[in-house]
Image 1 (cartoon, rainbow, N blue to C red):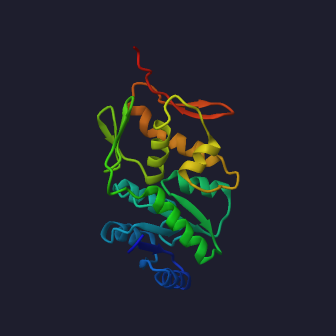
Image 2: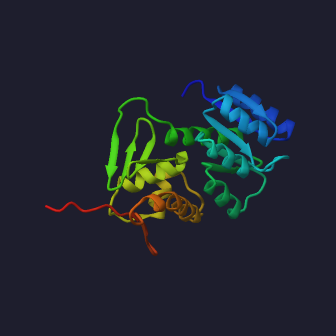
Image 3: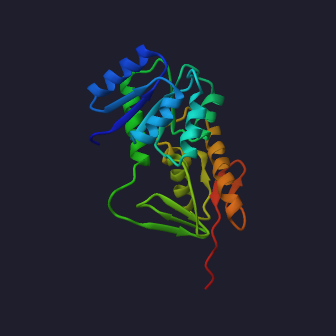
Amino acid sequence: MENIKVLVVDDEPSIRDLLSRQLRFAGFSVAAVGNGNDAVLAAEKAAPDIILLDVMLPDMNGFSVTKAIRAKGINVPVLFLSARDEEADRVTGLTVGGDDYVTKPFGLDEVVARIHAILRRTKTKETDSSVIEVGEIRINEDAHDVFVNGQIVEFSPTEYKLLRFLISNPNRVLSKEQIIDHVWNYDFNGEMGIVESYVSYLRKKLDPVTTEPLIRTKRGVGYMYVAPISKK
């Protein structure tokens, strides 16, 4: 990947400057701001490929920043940075539309690896346009547009990846382990609750515009996208 634009958001100048210098040394283009309002403006104007977003900011927390960005239709991937390492915070961050969560102190190699992992799973392929249509959902993979009964519905990059994985395996139960391996691409250290949270987030967007709930829970097993079975 070349010319990856990273927006660093952290209110501590020392961390912001150090991280910016290290990322530039690693080959990224970097812009940096120190509060949530500036982060929302920079996300609109600078069009970054990914945002490294501190959770604790002076004007609004990183979760609120992510909600504000998503409300504007900006689906840039977000990697949260936080000194807190509690599962509840991780789940909250990923549920509001974030894509990953790393705790301080962190090493540059880990941050760079996570940036590349996020971009691999969220970046739209510029070639091989294709459409996936199963039941009431139609995905245009070239544009990353999702249509539900003809109505476009907005999803964050990770929500999109999860939905795509589910509808690519219609009427098949997928375990939480399979989903994490496919959608997050690395081990969440047993934090399977993130899958449940993201499925809930999908349902909140899908259920109001579908004729019936399309994602079914198989207790103790996993989740399944229910599609109509063709009758011969």
